[in-house]
Length: 193
Image (cartoon, rainbow, N blue to C red):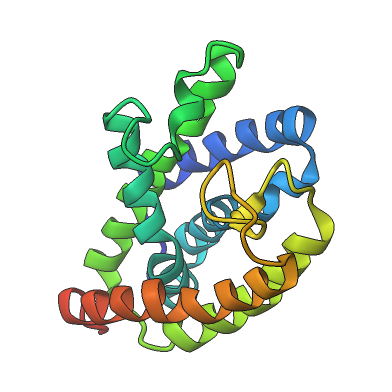
């Protein structure tokens, strides 16, 4: 397995080493259950090991959401609201700036896909991973944080369905609506080597 060059790996590693203690202090450990935070660690691991399956899982499971985050950020949080917190003056600017890790996360995932290709096993494994993570997130985090949207879609969820029904429906639809289309696109664009 190829290991990525240090000129890319070291700055990304430093970024993660800065983010972890700050997020732990400011948001608490539950924040690291976000798919994007897990993807941040997975990319770090893949940079050092060249593990194609790990970053492929994050590409199929997280890349669509990260692209939406970036587009929303470019519209100043007006399109979907998922990046609206980036423009919330009540949060310190330095803390919001750390959330820009979403941009290199996307760039590194795409670079890894171009360089090593996409591992087709990512779809079933990411689905199983989500089916474990989502109930854990629902159980371990509070409704106000709405980590991974386990309490409703978007940053300000509306509770139309009973919570457990919503969670089960979400777990069933996520692989079909997000993961499966992403899998087909990634499989076509980034053939495995």
